[in-house]
Length: 140
Image (cartoon, rainbow, N blue to C red):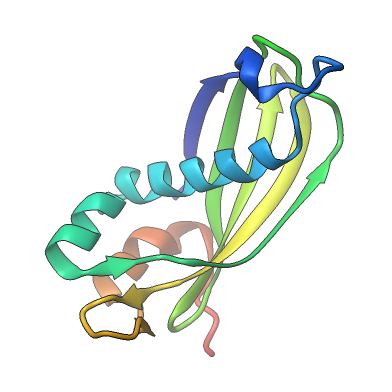
């Protein structure tokens, strides 16, 4: 499943040159990931509250192609690119108008916080089914 997360660049997102400060892309990828989970029917807040499940970030990367500026309207298109037993890789494509301005990803672990020490858990089949339309399952 592909989702879209929309936002407008705020003044505080930019540096002295008026260009978006790069760490904001990582914040927006995090926001887009949580929007993705909500869109497939499993908001992060409910997962944690009801099941003590979270999706901590293991790895992130972003490639910047064009600058974003104050008041730019942006769409982040997100989809699961890889799906493993306990881990998934979610791809994020930042689009302004018809231009791709950045591409990134986050690798996240399906993690139980029920015990004292967090522990990665297999992603349940009912969640995997929601993620699968855009990706073939990868074992491991």
